[in-house]
Length: 334
Ligand code: 5GP
Ligand code: MN
Ligand code: MN
Image (cartoon, rainbow, N blue to C red; front, top):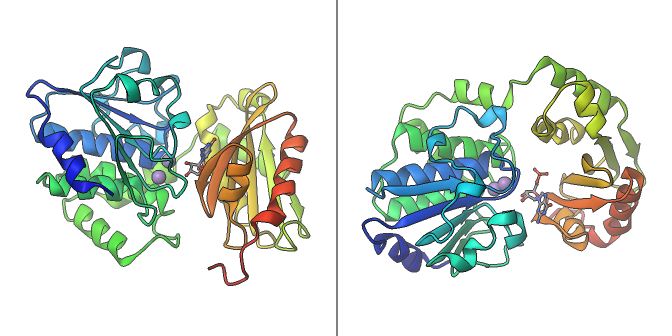
């Protein structure tokens, strides 16, 4: 990781330099939280021309609409065409930037902040730490190097990002350093109860009923993945329409499916087109699902990964099954 070069890119911005912050498509708490938290930090440093954006429709998922710094957001269609600096957050590869990918070429310089092991180092300067629990950990380190003090707004953004990617401090990446950072964020006075309720524990009644239906059709194959077990379900665009719900409500679905005791691997297929599915995969340690995802055109982390699947839901599940045996990990999970 090239900290000095990253620091220099920001310190050497011209006084009226335009900075474009971008994060991955269908942004989650880490993507938006690290991007907006860093953007607020740049603003504290006196950078005046800052835009934040992400590919696709400029719709922020309801659970993230309380984030500070949302005023930095512009639709991707209105983003600086040739910023002095573009900074990418939580994107493992260029393909995650959609229509904004051209900024890597048109910008004066490109800085990448990320924590995916599969990151392709597509920026001019890359701060990629596969051991970091979230991109926000990397973002906070760079802010600290720049001398930006944490305030309550920056802290709330980074806290949302940290809790999202650590499953509220439940996952393996939850190191002492993660808790030290959380402690420093909490010391600014943010309210973790309010934040968690808003981000994780609030959904429309229609989504509760939609989850009931989609969980009710889940399938379990205990002999898949060398006997480690596979559980999966799928949600169609028609399911969403019948319950009058937006696609992002399905992001939390995998957390209910992966509870299944009899399966190491869990999958949720979320229909995005007539024959297209956004696939989420999780493992409890017996399978490297990022290998499955990469083999099928996607990416992610060892125990949380995804890809875009084409065809029927059955066909996509068959393709996943075809990759499981090649992705088994030693029983220790090491
Ligand atoms: P989720 O299941 O929460 O959408 O994503 C889990 C992980 O897999 C995230 O780290 C995300 O970056 C990665 N991921 C999900 N979908 C895709 C995809 O279509 N392409 C790539 N490259 N990574 C994905
Ligand atoms: Mn993400
Ligand atoms: Mn992340």
